[in-house]
Every structure is written in structure tokens, then in C-alpha cells.
Amino acid sequence: MSTAPAAVQAGRTSSRPPAMVVARRAVNRLTLPVLLLLPALTIIAGLVGYPLVRTIYLSFTDTGLGELIYGGSEWVGLENFKEVFADEHLRTSLVNTVVFGTACVVGTMVLGFCVALLLNQKLKGNLLFGIAVLLPWAVPALAASAIWKWLFDARYGFVNWGLVNLGFDGFQDFAWFADRETAYVAIFITVVWQSFPFVALSLLAGLQTIPKETLQAAAVDGANAFQRFRLVTLPLLRPIVAVLVIFSTIWDFKIFDQIYVMAAGVPDRSADTAAVAAYREGFALSHYGLGSAVAVVLFVILLAFALIYVRLVGKEGELA
Image (cartoon, rainbow, N blue to C red):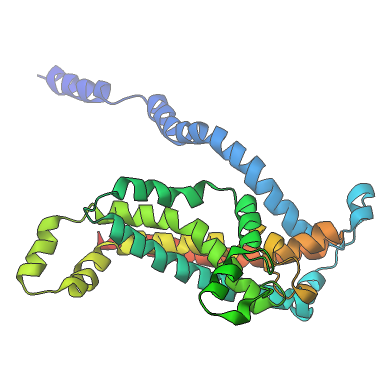
């Protein structure tokens, strides 16, 4: 009579895994993901983390060419950042970055949306049109800048020739790059021309996922084409549009090639953006500390937009 409960108790005890096994499983659950992520984390730390930390460190020092080679740079705290906002040229470059970058984002999204809607229609030659849309994206930014600078050339450019033949005689030998505003018009066209293919194709992919039955139901309810776009298409594309806006903002805020190549003749470098100003201070003038401070300020601006992107994606996930 007394042996049965003991056997049952022994059976219960033997069915539990030993404490060492439980501990080993817990360690494996923690260490295995870390070991799997370690190669990628090491590469990211080397390629992204070190340059970022190095740039932030330099932004707090007075590093010049001599200090960079022989060492001996001094810690100056926030002096470089104070100079960034006190210097008129550097301060203007930050304003140019935000204003011009925003204009490029708006232009890219509008043109990309129009092209995506056109490609979504069943028209003859859509395949060739789609291939043609991809061509600007395949051209390197430096080459595109050189081509468009020639097109806007005052004497031999196609743009002035076309405008004069259309009756705008004021554009005879018009120098687009003689001042900041007209230079930005030419650069805006170049940036949008090269950026819209990615936006158009991404939106086209989104448009093709919208069920036709939904649009047909809206049409049956009496919605016209614009109402179907505003009340059905646009809300369904909202997650893609949000991501594209943030990506375009990051790309357009740090454009370098177009500004450096096309706006080189603008007096007083008044058309410089933050990326170009950081390059000039760091590499042309060997003010590595000050150039790094400009780059850090640009990084903070872009980080703010990246946080907005993460927040938007999080909200869309909650809605889903």
C-alpha cells in the first residue's frame, strides 16, 4: 500500500528535465540568436558604426590636416557647432538643404504618381514606356549632372534654344547658373528627372495590388474618377506613400553630385547645401572638425525624418 504513491511520485519526478538541461536550453535560447546575428552586427559596426563615431568625435575637435596626420587635435566642445549656426554660409547651406530638399520631394512624388497612374492604364506601348521610365534611374548622378548642365548651357544649351524658338527671346544666352534661384530650377529638374522612376514603379506596384472590385463598387455607388482616387486609391496606398516620402526626403536632403557639378559657378557658393558645405570645409579647406560638425547636423536632421518613418510604419502596423 505504501509503495504506490512513492512510485507515482518517482514517475512525476523523473518526467521533469534536470535543472542543468533547463539552464542549458535557456542559455541556447539567448546565445543562438546573438551568434547568428554576430557576423552581420560586426560588418555593420565596421562599415557604419566606426565612421559615424569617428565623425562625431572629430566634430568636437579642432582637427585640421596637420592634426589628422600627426595627431594632437584639441577638444573644443561645441565650438564647431556654434560656428555652423553663426557662419552665414554654413547657416544658409542648412536652409538650402531643407527648402530645396522639400521641393525636390514634392516634385518627385507628384511626377512619380502621375507616371504610375499612366503606367497602370492598359495602353499600347506601356512596356516601352515603362522601360523608358527606368532609363534616368540607370544614369549615374555625376553623368546626369554633366548632361543637364550642358543642356542648360547659356550659349549651346538645348533649353535656351528651345525657349527662344518658342518665342521667349529673353532666354537668348541666358545664364542659368549665374544666381542661386535659376540654378536651383535647373538642378530641381535634374534631381526630379532622376528620382521619379523609383517612386513611379513603387507606386505602380501598389496600384496593381488594389482589388478592381473595390474600384468598381465605388463607381457603382456614383463616385467619379477623382473621388475614386481620393477616397479609395490614395488611402490604400498610404503606407507606400509614407515610406516613399521619407526615403525621398533622406535622398534629396543629402544630394551632392548635382549641386557640386551644376552649381559650381554660383557666386559666393550661395547654392551650397549641407552635404556640399561639409565636403568643402572638410576636404577643400582641411577643416575636418568643422566639416564633421556640418555632417553631424545633417545627420541629426535625417535621423529626425527616419524616426518619423519608423513611427509611421508602426502606426500602419497597428492599423493593420
